[in-house]
Length: 467
Image 1 (tube, helix red, strand yellow):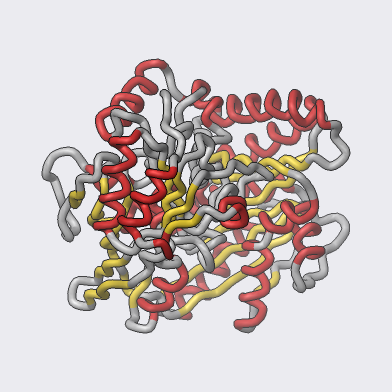
Image 2: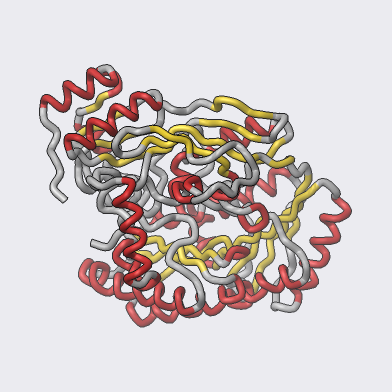
């Protein structure tokens, strides 16, 4: 695909559309918007645009489509798969100024928001009214809802409440040619042909620009209990996960952290929990609801299950501060790894009963290819984040052996009934592994969908599809 470089006449056109104050060309801004949280990758855009509404986005897309200028949509830049990297140059279209909660419908338990609203801002706004928006990625304090939709974000609460797609009722979308449409209706059931709403969720900004979002809310669970379970074996910790569900309990969160992840976090954040030398992993387990007696009984039952898998003494968080510290420890794992080393993060997911086999295989593959991995993740969903750290590896081994090892990890994941990403998306860094998960027919269907929405290939080019 041949794309047009930005010219002075293009700059003038964008300034007329948006005003000079929303068009950015200076090198510092281009550098800031040339990376997200994916490894240490950086690709400079030629221009950054910050529209303020749907109409401006429509004008941008119509113009760029006619001029064959690549457009990379960007939310908060917290992505981990390179989805917001402008690898073809062109324009970064930032949604940061579309940041309003437009309406909270208390009668129908719905909210209408713009894509630049921060996840946690919406959560706190609806909690004040007794409602709950459960999707809670680790980046919830900074990530935008539009980006959450683009990647179908999950988080710890997904094990009980589901992921982003389960809360999206309707979307306003700008197509690559500038046309604007709504994907559905603000209803809980909809059997009216193809589900365009769900097609947009998880499409990683390759089909259209989301400009308004209607989300479903549920009643807020007022009580929760949190327990930290130490294990002498990381594989035993993984085996214990599916046993909890077989015992008839669905926790509101069930998180896995191996020993190295905890040690790295302790160095990164001001949280200090004593960990015995022989402990190799922890499960962080939360139950929630509105009846404390029921929750205590669930925790007792979970404790009985854990005892069958060689755990040590279980810690119950007795205060809000202890709960916050435990969650801060878990949510800081990714940042802790990143602060200590160059790394690559893989977002594998398998049926939860296969988690122990996946963890064992990851470690064996690391030994074969000479790299170290730090693992943690949403164990209740079978979602294991595998952080491969460069450490003392040579640049040559990092460039050659690590991709070979990643391919083996993905092959194992698929062989166990899983797939390449649970919540981070494919984006730029995983696209060349898609042949492991999809055959020619499956890839062809996906490419056909992309071509229908974006025949000129201007929207987030270079993502999802193999080079």
